[in-house]
Length: 496
Image 1 (cartoon, helix red, strand yellow):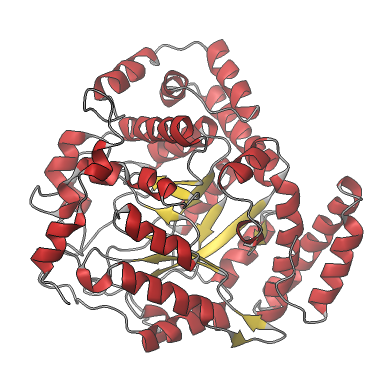
Image 2 (cartoon, rainbow, N blue to C red):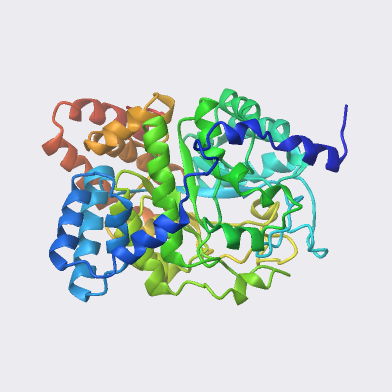
């Protein structure tokens, strides 16, 4: 039986799936007074103390809020350089020199919320509203997996009954079922991550059953007064705690890879970093595992959403880089996602600061991949992106910088998730598997999709990576040689 939009909204929030997580006094884990005290305490940290904090990060230990606050206030150029060097060393130690790529895929622009910074707001009468049907979804995946070569997607949905959990389940299943011929093998999406609205435990179990990867919900802002101001109280998103405990419900539904984030520019950026750290500590303490990824998107221009450009808290490039550096050091094991919201030049500068994932060939309009729109269309997409370079261009540039692009999804399918992968990341062991799988999937992509120019630049890099395995991991080297040769001969999806 179908229900009206209002009936659907009324059934959405489950109060008992908030109250069970609250403290005895009914409060949540974001203690704003304590955050302000932490920030104040970090203003006059000595250089010696900052270096002690960096040494702790390099041991792959999560920083305390007060240690994080001290890093947020560093101004000395020499200490900033040392933070950058430490961030790069952490990335190398935990994730090696690989960068994972993905593409966002927007499947709905209908939304019941009224966020003041978003083009999808229900108040925006000029937005084209629709849900992507299955035939168009297949065309989008054909472009992404069959022509561009992506293996991993983050699929994005608005909050609306037409894109509810059943639609999400159907679309995820359809994405996994799509297989396309390539030059030497096949193109297929192997991991579907989800960026969607907060859900109940019951709905999240449905996502677990269909085999999603990481489940993302960004708090947007951890500052309660600001949250209330930018998310109207009469909307679903106006409930701060329903959103705040999204990850708790995901863990309780059996989803053990979760992604958190804040939208930088809604409130003071230092406070938002602290909110992310408090969120990380809460998950570690309650579930024994922190976020699989942390994202830090900035406000970008959005059609009929003036707050996106008029906010008093817009974050400049230098402060943004400082936030990224601090997060890398504060949660050294987590994946760090830098998106195409940022322009190519800034992404180039921030990538060495410990970034592990980035998107490429990004389009965020509904149907924009298969329709191949040449320009960004304000009536079709949520905001304006800053970097529209192709995957081939991004892979080539990263090879020039010495990074191997990884299309690996093996760890998730082998069960290296949740506490298992966190333990492996913290001791540096997961990186050994990931390096092997990065080489194999890089070979796949180069043979199936790369331009001649990109292959020419990438070949010396992949040979260097193979030689490094021979020297540092001799036990696994014979198997790598076997898998690599089989991949060159046309085998696909071999992994460790």
